[in-house]
Amino acid sequence: MPNQNGNVYGLTILSPIIDDEKATPSHDLQIRKYLATLPTGADSPFAQAPGTHLARLVVMDDVVYVGMPACEEHLNSKYLIFESNLDGGPNGDLDSYLNGLAQNIPEHLDAIWSHCVGYPGAANAKAFIDYMKSCQLETTFFFAAVNDKSVPETLRALETQRAVTDFIATHQGMEPGQLQAEFIRFANDLKATPPPPAGSMAPSREIKTGGRNE
Amino acid sequence: MSNINGKVYAMNAITPMRPWKTWVLRLIFFVLGHVKPLQNDLINLSFIEFARWVVVPRNKFPSLGDGQVKEELKYDYLLFFSNFNGTWNQYIDAFSAVLAKGLNLIWRWSEKFPGSVPVTIFKEYIARVQFDTDYYYTAYPHATANDLKSAHIVQAAFDSLSEQATISTPQQFGDAYLNFVLQVQTHLGETGEAPVVF
Image (cartoon, chains in turn purple, cyan):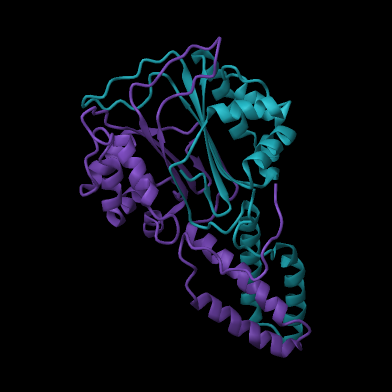
């Protein structure tokens, strides 16, 4: 299945935006305005709903004209692109993901997609899922650098990596018996600590990179 | 507009293709998807978290009725979405240097594609067909693709040592811990804010 790579699902949705010349501002502009105010960190709507690794929303105004001798042509509608890389599990469970969006962030979904043709609202989860699927495009080729880990597993692993680095640095040259006791305590503490919230940055580093990086 | 979130850059590109050529491209992607060694260059580049190509046939743009005018297009379109670490220039340069043949194989079916070498006209083409992202979210903005791979290696080694720790003698644990450190030492790079890029 081209939409799937391992346990990760590549969702591509093109929703036609309402073309209403009486609307002021136009619907595409209203989507853009809303997206410009939407938080992108731990308070992002996609962090509140489960399963999103990376996602983007893009208003596509038109196709691109690449110049002669190609033909120039234009779209009749503008489209809202929703591209999401999500935890689909081994069977590519798209319905659970879309249902999770509808249950957790309906107000954001409605604020964005209410400017799209035929959007039924997120209150009716089944109608919402059917609508999203009717706008879905099949991915032709999907690449994932890590395709067998869920979002919580990845956040947990990043936290473990950071904590293990600190542990190793502060326990060098320790006698094995004491090291073992401290490691067991450290491992238990780490397992009991919830992973950092999705979308959050790591703790600030004291050492900053300097100079230009081009 | 926000193409960047933390250490990840979102690229969108769309290129027109004559409809008969999309079948050639589909065949290429089919082979690429089923012969994993052909993906090695893409994997070894190691700064792409997720990427996808989507062929949209000219008559398959979603049409929902309800007053929407159906599209009347001559071309099929190739959509490309990438989530990569680093700057736009670094990405295109690396693509051109390492994946030139692969890129040509994918995009040569698009109208006016100049080839991925020399890189200057390739960049001009990409800039022309690229469009910007309005909203970009990542669950781990401070991590690169390499950080993710390393973190999972550390996690697996850590889980294994944790199990061993409770049933080993201090001497056995000392040896196991040393092996653990040797195993993870190259995967302990610190994540954090992205470097400032000018």
